[in-house]
Length: 194
Image 1 (cartoon, one colour):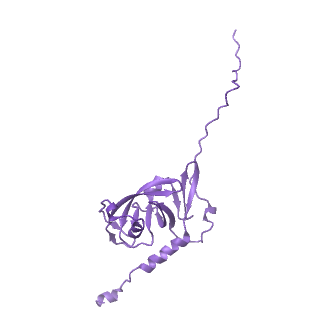
Image 2 (cartoon, rainbow, N blue to C red):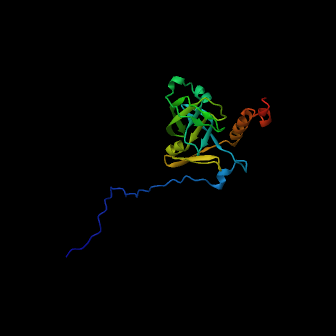
Image 3 (cartoon, rainbow, N blue to C red):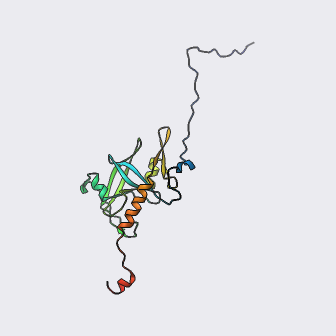
């Protein structure tokens, strides 16, 4: 007859720990709106590290697919026109005008510890923003942005980090864009040939 004995414990072995997998949730709460002037209808404007430089007035636009780099920033990053690769598809600007790009360039964009390479289309046009970051970049970063909270959250190692936008810079960009609008002639002036 056989009798079952309990297993012999090895006093030198360490107890095995269960592996716990933590799922990070990218979300926003009502308290994430603290510090913003309510109500508002502002876009998300942040500061990012692009090409090794801290770049202000970066528009995070979930509705666009093309990452735009304006010529003033291009020159500010000490890049040469020879650094551009060909890109000849025309773009439609915010003002409804067709813009012909000067070319395309790949640059590193750093948010916290994460670095994502981005292909920017460089345009020689006025903008109160220095660059526009768009949906594909958010996807590459694994980020979620919220204009309601004026923040962007993204996973970094085993934590959720956030990038906070600046409501005052957003409004300064809006004022600059309005002030830059060329004068529109009234239809009466056009009819008289003025």
